[in-house]
Image (cartoon, rainbow, N blue to C red; front, side):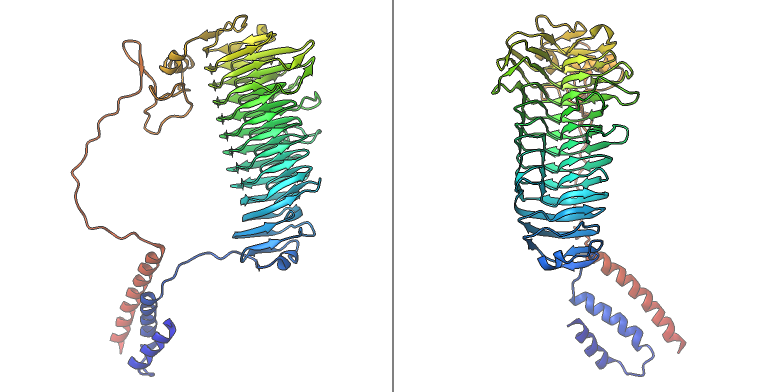
Length: 567
């Protein structure tokens, strides 16, 4: 239509021998097109379009493809895929995993729907196995995974050659397995892997392995912490995680090697009926041949955590008996709001229960002085019930850490505001921590607790009331002693300190002359009289293009005039 209008205008108003015809025709054509036709600028996806299941099955292993429309698959891609698949915002509905194996592939911008029966084999909606440097970006899984061995929403297993990068992925579906189960990845064997800005919203259930919202297990038995690491940043688990097998965690359940978990949040209930559980991280390996390097920072747990042997709001078990220089563990700047309790449905003989507000068990040698739990707050209630333990069993409790077996262990600037309820004989109890090697621990300072337990051994803890914590006093005292601002608190709103400053500084804590505590008084804002100005329509992408073309037309017009004067 736009072309016809321009042609009619040209034939009517210009002679064929006019030397300015082409230039003026171009100008008028642009004006006519802009006035009649609307358009937008968008980058097209790269590669070959895929429009059907047959075209998906026929993809070259190393090709670059994109989805042109939604498709339905009833079979898994036959060979290892090594190329790029851009979902282009479309949906693939599946009844089997999309890929049996990928090797150095990139999968992105995709939604997967449907249901997959794993038939007792490993299963995931996108890929069962991964090798090489693989990337998953902006993928949402809505396909349920049931009856799998190892299962997850995006990737089941990353082998020993794989390096996984996962960004902006979401699992919305329930995952049920016999072994490892997770919302995003079931099992990563080795190397350096990064998981960023991912979310699990699907219920996770394992009958015999580790279970977690993000990754069930990292590290094969021979993995070494200095070369094998999983980094989990700004991830969220919103669903319940349950296992009848071994470990459970909001982000990561079981670790052999190293991990950094930072800025993560768990909102689901985390339960292991058989072993250990942590709101953020379950446990590190117990084998003395391996050394785990662990950093958990700026994480929050809201869910209830329960397990029969080790249970804690943030981390179940930390460290190893053998500790190497530089491979230390640290839990820092974390808050637990969730209740922590013993799972008592199964009876255990000659067992030990460790139950803590932040960490359950911390073990490490004397080489590294940076092991510890610092700047952490527990607001969850602790129920230490040993009714499921028989024979020569033991119970250890701590408002922050239940049991420490380390000479060099840093425990400072911590607050326990949770109430401890005890059912049965207590073997070791700490208002903040119970440390088997207390005489060697040199950095246990500036800790506060509302619990004044009979028989508690941590004399370095200051006992306070809940009102003192709510008033801002405790946060102020910790900040003052530390010589830096660690805690913030909106007095009258926050019942306990937080670790994040308000943008306007309104939750900074000050001490008044009368000894009370308050936040800064905001200066009243001066309101300038309003002036009414004509509204300017918002600038759109099309408007920007139009303005640019008008500028070009103006320049061409000047050129035409100049040219005309030459005749």
